[in-house]
Length: 126
Image 1: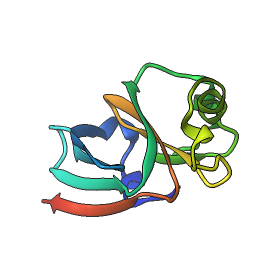
Image 2: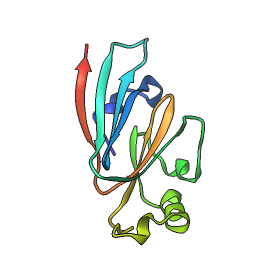
Image 3: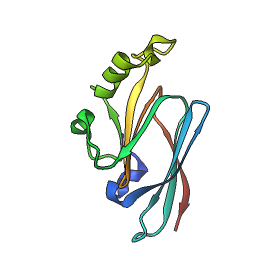
């Protein structure tokens, strides 16, 4: 998924803060100390799964990633795992409507299953 964050490499973006309120997941990212400060807020309005991993933790879905900071996975091993080992899709949530996104930063990889792409809001830029 192409976004304004792609103007820099993933190694230039870091986690500033995260927030979960009801089903909404917000992630504020900032540039590293060697660059002029920029902050953006990435928000998923309705999330059904959120996972945070160390940037070095690669998984089966890492091979699917393009060069974008935010990526939508098409053939997701995570979605298969959720279906096999959780009850998320046993409720009113339909697997066909859910989408797997990941956000690759210098310090963490966030995996989010949501129903629509995130919104990105500029908070600060020098």
